[in-house]
Length: 347
Ligand SMILES: [Zn+2]
Image 1 (tube, protein in one colour):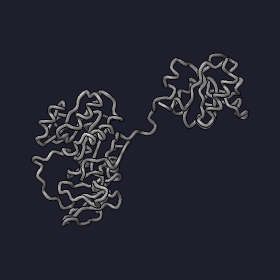
Image 2: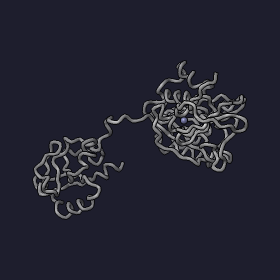
Image 3: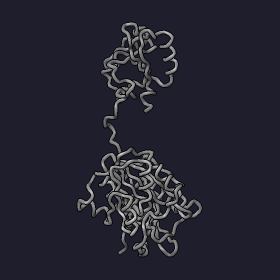
C-alpha cells in the first residue's frame, strides 16, 4: 500500500511528484511547496542548524529586519540558536528580559555564554514537561531550521504554543532552491523547499498572519536567496482598536468640533473615535445643515461663533489644506487648536 502524500504547507493531497538526483520530491500545484518523499538519513551529530551565515553584514541584515518590529524588554526564544550569533546581534540592538535558545549540537556550549538558557530537547517536549511555559515569549525565532524537519507544521505549532497571544514569530529558510540561478536545491539535509506562498500558507494554517517578508536575503554564497518572514496571530475583525480620540494631540480636550461630515464619519470616526466627544459637525454642504450624525448636529462654519477655544478636527484628507486655510483666515478668534485626521493616523 502506498502512503498518501499530503503537502506539509497547504495540506493538499497527492501533489505532483518529480525525481531529482534519484530521489523523489513533491511539487505542489496549489502552494508550490516541494518536499522530499525519499529522505536519506543525515548525521546531525555535529551539525548546528543555522550555523552558517555569520558574516557581519548578514547578521546585521537579519537582526535589523527583526529589531525594527520589536520593542525593548522582550522575552525571546530561538529554536536552533547554533552558537548564538543572531542572539548577540539582536542584543546589540534591543534589550531583552530573557533570550533563551534550543540547540542540540555542541554549538550550544558557545550559545550558553551568550543566551540566558539553552535547552537541548525538542520544543514540544520542553512545553509538555513545563521546562518552557506556554504563551510566555514575545518573540520566537527560527533561522534555517524549518527546511531540515520532517514535520515543519509540528514545529510551527510548538513555536505558536510558546508564543504570547500578541507575540511575534520569525522564520528564515532558503527561498525555493535558495539561489536565484539554481532551479532546485539537492542539499540532502533539506527535506522542505519553501517559497513565499508555501511558507505564508503554512503560517496561516496555524492562525499566523505574515506581517513582513523579504526574499533575496543572503545566508552565504550557496543560499544567497533566503526568505525571511515575521508573523503574528491573526487579528480578529471587530476587536476594538485603539481609538483615534486617544491620540496625545487630543489629550485634555473634552469636546471637539469635527469639520467635514463626509464619508470619513462612517469609515473612520464611527469605528475609531469616541463619538461622545463630538460637539457638532461643520460642513460647507448646506443640504447637510440641521441633520444629526451620531447624535451631533451638522452646522455651517458660523456655528463656531457659539463658543470659544474650540479644538477643530479636520475630518478630510483631500480638503485638509483648504479647511486649515479657511480657519486661519476667518475663525482664529474662536478656534484654539486645529488637529487633522491625518495627524491622528500618523503615529
Ligand atoms: Zn501545497
